Amino acid sequence: MPKLVPTTQTGSLTDHQHGTDDTLVVAVGGQPFYGDALSMFDTARGGDDVLIGADPLFNILDGDAGQMHDHSRGGSDHLIGADNSFNFLIGDAFAMDGASRGGDDTLTGGLNSLNELFGDAYSLSGNAHGGNDTLTGGTGIFTPPFSDPTILEYGDAFAMHDHARGGDDTLVGGFGQAVYLYGDARTLDGDSRGGNDTLIADSGSYLYGDAFSLSGSARGGDDILVSGRFTDNMWGDAQVIDGSAVSTGADTYVFGPGSGTDYIHDFRQGDHDRIDVRAYDFHDISDLTIVGNAIEFDAFNRVVLVGFDGTLHASDFIFA
Image 1 (tube, rainbow, N blue to C red):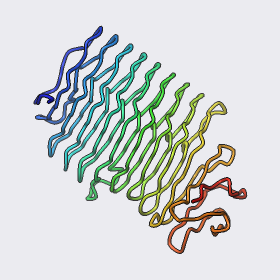
Image 2 (cartoon, rainbow, N blue to C red; image 1 turned 45 degrees about the vertical axis):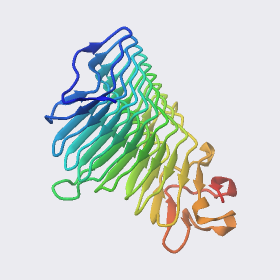
Image 3 (cartoon, one colour; image 1 turned 135 degrees about the horizontal axis):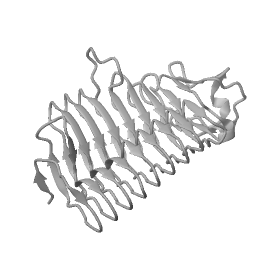
Image 4 (cartoon, rainbow, N blue to C red; image 1 turned 180 degrees about the horizontal axis):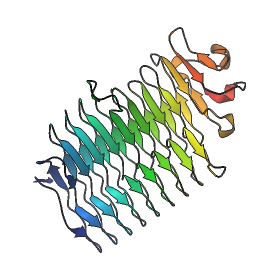
């Protein structure tokens, strides 16, 4: 059984040191809590920790450390945000560089909260690799004065630089005033690479399979974006692509009954993007009603391919 630790870990893990498997409960909000150490170097390893936020507080939880360097490795941690709080949850460390590796973490936002979740780090640089993480948004705040996003999920980090690599993450959006899901990070630059991620909307969401922006020679992954209730805006790769050296992935957009009117903003036949309509039990393109750049699934549900002026073919779809 893991032991209960009512305060944050301090100090450093170096050489071949391993962190223990702890349950860490926040006692005082507003300061970072680390599952294993303040810093990790060399080939240190983090434990498989459970970090639990307190209600109602400003919870800053790092599954392993504040910083991870060299060949250090994060554990498979579970971070749980509190209700009625601001939850800033990071699966491994605030900053990861060198050849550090993130664990396969699970992050869960709180109810009626501002939830900002990062699967591995706030910043991934050098040759750092993210783990295969699962993020669940919780429920965002709906009452004034909160007019900004109340659920933000980043599969790996806020920013990825150099030769950083993203993991194959699963992001489940919550029900909030504004929900933003980024499969890898908000920005990928340098020679960074996105993973093959799955993004699942709940309420109306903004879904970015890789990032808001790709630049340098960044490469997007092959992502799956699943529509939820209400209106979703989807980018399989990124909203902003800066540079001819950027590579985009083959993405899949999934729709089913009750998804409402949705928008795909970067459908590319050249990338072999596809639209999955199996939930409607469509077997052939002749089962679809296509009007201009809009696909009408039925009287209540449709998807608009923003900026697309080509001709859709059966090969652009996945049928039942």
